[in-house]
Image (tube, rainbow, N blue to C red; front, side):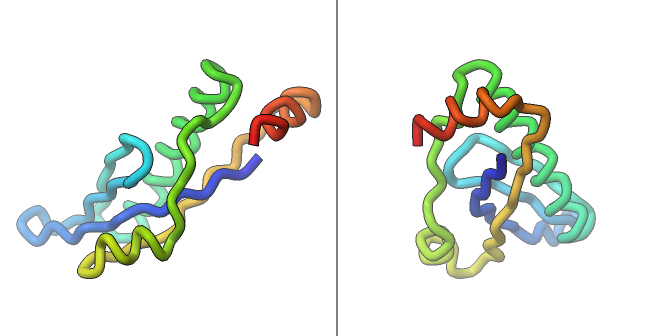
Length: 100
């Protein structure tokens, strides 16, 4: 299963790195480069989705659209971050998809 959420990347001049925040889930991380920050954000989002699936049987949070995030953060970089969660049985995937 794949989940995609928009993330906001902030340039931190003082620490010479990038901070990342997701509008729709409480995930925050950072990286020295934008690429590093993106891959860290992807890992955190994947872990969040796996835990949510394990605890609730679904990812309850629904991402806003890229355009909504872009409109709310006009001066920042907004990227779509994907998280592919593997290892679910066919039955688990069908149960999860039936909630959407």
